[in-house]
Length: 475
Image (cartoon, rainbow, N blue to C red):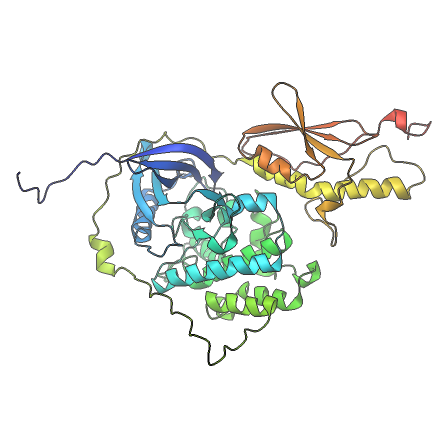
């Protein structure tokens, strides 16, 4: 056989796109399978860059970051396995993944987590991020969509992180002529990133070699913002799920709303508040220091081990590839056939469903209180003026037993979801549209249609009282 040294082998690796996960942050994400080894992969297609008018330099930077992310080795950090471009130069990245779910889906079904669960997740993510930081790699966009959990139950202490340094930076976004700064693009950026945006727009020279979103301090801020959101069900700054303009103004001028005022223990609130400081120098010395202090605030100070206790095993050292290895690393052939770029959009099915469900408890509780306290029943049970925030102490399990949600099937058959509305998220998460029916005695049925769209208004539900059950004057 002839000597093949110096030649190129055309390997037929195929990636089957099994399922479209959704669109967010100028990308569309697919779950896929790599042949011939039947390995699960995650395919991220940057189809929104074309619509936003991104320069070719953005694709080049993503390619460089993908090469660095391919060297991630610890089991909790998901490495890049391939990179390529499809029609019109739209890049895609293929990463390791696992068969399970994402933290984003868990948060759609459960808006608020207990402090113990938050601590479990923060401990795990801080360990993984600290390992990456030691290797000289920062994440830069720690969104729930990039945090994956194994299996259907999704144990938080086995979370894994993907998409390291692969999201557009604020510097890149402000240079895209058609880019709109939506919440899903900027919600993980710390305040210092928006200083860079202002400098870029004023044409001041860039003297900083490291982008401010790709620092250990920025990852700490993003993890603190995620912790804040898990504890109280809302982001510290970005309230609107689409329009980020108000949050951007507040993040540079205001401290976030106090967790203590929202019922969170003051010691926990103090730890998270420090990690959310607007000045990176005022945050915890490291992301591990943040998680350690959060553990002490939630679980109490760690006890000193006895002299007879065996020493804890040392974690294996992080293996960072040298700079010259990145420069000399051969490019992998990008051969998968993907669908062409499509207009970027937002899959609002889960988001709208989660919004509605997170407020049904308050809606039903308000309706019951009006029925019991008022001398005459009101014709319309009005929702709260700001349904995006539940009052302190109101729990979703206060939904009355005689209030039910139904899914209307294609054959017009209705299937009850019972008195616990969380189940509807799981029912609709796989579909692009859904038809729900809200029923309560003495009120007319209230239909609700949810479909895939690029934008949509907030939805408030009101039930119209059945005249046959009301007073004689029809009130």
